[in-house]
Length: 626
Image (cartoon, rainbow, N blue to C red; front, side, top):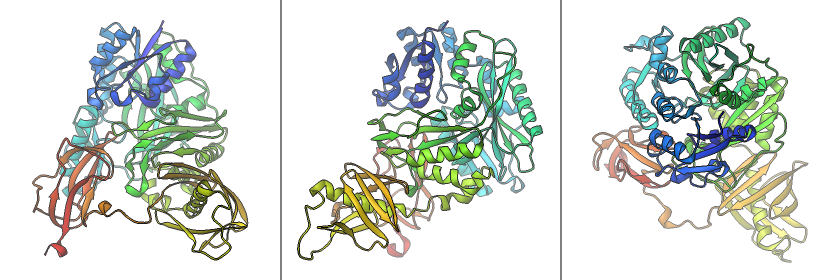
């Protein structure tokens, strides 16, 4: 029997495994990097062991250090979570060789499926060997990858070499393995997967289907179970293929077999993930299971019932990321001041690795939380999730929350018209700023006035100049008088009530409440119109903040991993040419030239850590350079 378990991962998945361990009476051990010394998963564990350093390669990817940590803490089992070492056969062997229980499939099964190229060969498939115009578009994928890292769509032969190199670099950084391969890219396909669970006694369950088609940058954003609208015959085929894949490698524990379903209804095998998936909660909700508890029981030698339980209802999951849509969806860092999802009751679940006051750093994935909703019919589950996200208080780095809400309410999604091109078609419309930001700025300005002097602190008997407060592009002019506040230049608006943390505005005859929370120069406004993060702008700009024309500034804190070949001061560059590659939160980001011209400065050096806003290079446009 397992008495003490170490989770060889961090964040949300570590917290999720610890939750089940507490319910089963199993003691828990966390490992942590220096950057995670006070992280939520460390605080929730019964014991914790430090892994010196911050980068994943020095900490969470060091299987030798993790095995030593487990032995030092007296653990008798290791759960790999997902990512990092969860699909590393050598790590699984090291755990077993140390006399510890491995919560996962046999190393031989991991080895057979860990490389996507070898998995395809096992299933009688083969990647593309050579690419011609007739093969386009193609997809570059990391053989040992996941989470969208090391993945690129290529639509022209001229771009192939560059994308292969970029994918290799990103894959080597993220997984320690730079192997990539090519496969056909199916336009408007559906990403459908099957959860499997197997014991050591010959039983293999296929636990329904999940649709994970809503992806951006090849990373899953919204997932649901069951996958809607699939023909029963196709579901049966997917289940049979998944069970066959598990049996072919003598699988044990939880795993996922992934397929791409083409518009004509044909299923194409993608890969088998020999671990728990991020989206496993939707399967748990539909089948009424705890997959982590079942993983532990299977590892202890227990047999599964011959038949899997029956599915009931529908579940949808949304991944909340710290990323800024106004800056190319780049990952964001900073303190998470508040994370509150209302109505956390039966039918709604939040999995997170952060608590209020925690910092989101540059070293790891930018996912803040997963929010999962269940209801008997699909449309109620979707509505419940959208409502919960809309009313959530998420104060800190900018997030993709508005994108999630709009995606869940989009006619294509509500109508179950799903495919992997959803965001390619709809992203611009889904990210148009809403009218709510203008009213949020008004509420923030009035709350600020109330906090500085009260409702009647500034009124005069004679006419005076209005007060001015600026948030981003929104200028708010207001006056304070005997009858309260009056806002100028906003038609149909009446101020009902003002307090430092709450403002009530009547908008075209409808009264709405705005909650306001300020942290430094950031103001967070929550209302039925959505949540806005506003930055107060000084009335007079600091001349030192002005950058030279053509300056390329770091859009996020990170590490310079690469500079374009042959670049240096005086070199001519073209518009859109990649100049610098930054790595942040396990993803690589290209900084491209904004125009054609001369590179007059290059401050980026491979290996150098840079802060957001750091000057990387300066390009002087050709017209001004001549």
